[in-house]
Image: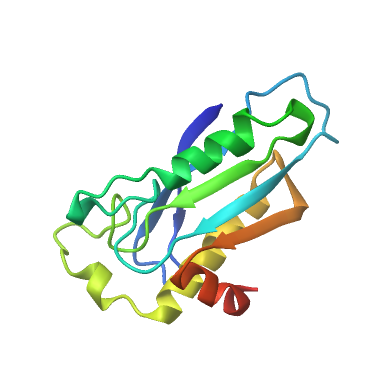
Amino acid sequence: MNVKEVSFPSADGTLQMYGDLSLPEQQEQSSSDLLPAIVIVNGSGPIDRNGDIPQMKLKLNTSNQFAKHMAEERPKDRAIAVLSYDKRGVGKSKKKGDKNLFYRTGMVDIVLDAVEAVRYVFAHPRIDKSKIVLMGHSEGAIILPIIC
């Protein structure tokens, strides 16, 4: 599995959002061998791209495990790319010196940042634009209809 740190602008343009794009190892592919993709929309709380809550020292690595399964443990012809990203104010998706950004982030910010994550995946050259799925849990699942 090839995991690459990626970034994309936040919806309001005030910071870069960081995450990991997990792709299966590239085989000899033709341009018609595009991958479906899943964008993980995290639940409530200060959750990073790994599905962890660093402030609470809670390490579940749920996003990493899910990405590994989708990109590496499925048959090669059924592999799926996965983008997971740090929520605004968490991990590397911060403004320098602003320790309260996460707490000032509203629901609209979270929705619009998720839209930007989808735009990033949509523009990726290895992704099939017609096969992008959003997956959310907790707050992430609640806001999915708004994103779509």
